[in-house]
Length: 579
Image (cartoon, rainbow, N blue to C red; front, side):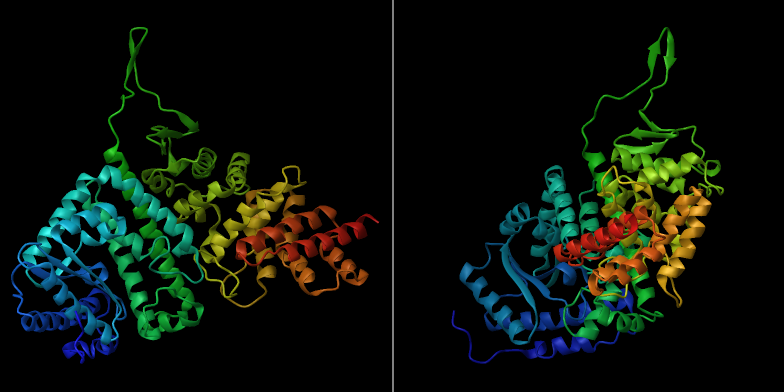
């Protein structure tokens, strides 16, 4: 079909500007509902005008529907319009539907609106949803805008029915998509420049929560999760109004403006609030996926009571640690566990989770929140359990996350609260301070097994940036004081405490010297040796800590050139110290 010479913009001409100009007086969902109403009204006028011009009845067999954020009525001021022309496949011939589609889409493009469009019959809605997972997630919440609403309701009902009946087949694909998106975009709670839509715990995951609930396999959490969703939407909307484009990644350059627009004190408060929301959505998604899997699990043989020598004996579940047992693929507390009177229980459970790779059940995490702090100096078992967690490499990441969300970590390290979710101001840092510390330990675990004082390296990795708290002062000096208090409270050997404090205080000196100093200058070498207490072991440990710190900072920080410079500097220092 040949397009008319003049675009028929009508009410669409100023829609893009009107969306940006709409004041968020009430904020939150009320603001987004008014945005949705503004778009719906313009689309309805446009649809009725074009359908009447083409002689197509607006009330029979065809309708304009909204999918995605506009369908959910939570679109932002610059969100794209995901629209679908739905027809019953019988009332109107295909060429007439095609003419209507072209008459609808072209003026939307001419109006400068970002448009994702499709034309689907009822049968095509079902086939597309069956073959395309993202399309299925969108179609289960399709909403009629104008035209024959019954056609849209039929499409939605059919897709929902298929979604529920195919839940066993679709759930693994849905979980894989969650994991793949997290691998690409990271975790919202631990990023210095998070993508509030795509990152783990972001708006995409909140939508998946609703899709999981639509399977009827498991209900999703409400209340705080809905508030977390609103927090992310508010931040996205403020960012879009500031940039006047469909932005979802919160760059440092915009963070203070967004914080001000939301009535927050500064960018740190904004990122901390977003981190809390992301953590809550992420944990809720994990719990809902687990419940859905359990609902789909086929009945298995029940481990019941047995008769032993003429007496009934209760079933025994596998014990993985004192007070911690495995049940249904998760770690739970046994009946004799007493969290409120066992200060080592949470550390024991954390070590068991990292060792076995099994997740702590939500009920277990909630119970562990009641464990008291170990009395200083810590019992040997408590130190060993925390050290076992640190030695577990990447396995500790999900353990730290689940326990920190429940405020268990601060019962071990009260100082952790000051760095939790704290943004890094350096542009090379990818993670927030707390995640950077744990990520450094993960990289430090790659050090050789026979490295002298290897455990000291892990403690130093966990504490090297613990001084990045509010207030003035060199974070290395502040961190050395805080780390000294922590390792003394934990009860490490005096020599270990001193070495850890030295590593924290000087954790940047090798990297700075390798980058900018003349490492062949004997004076430079002598100065560095003095800072490191003329101790060869401290030099070697600092070399490994510097690499772990750099690798945990960002993908471009540790380079082959820097590695060669660091090795050369370390060799010079060791030669100097050993004569």
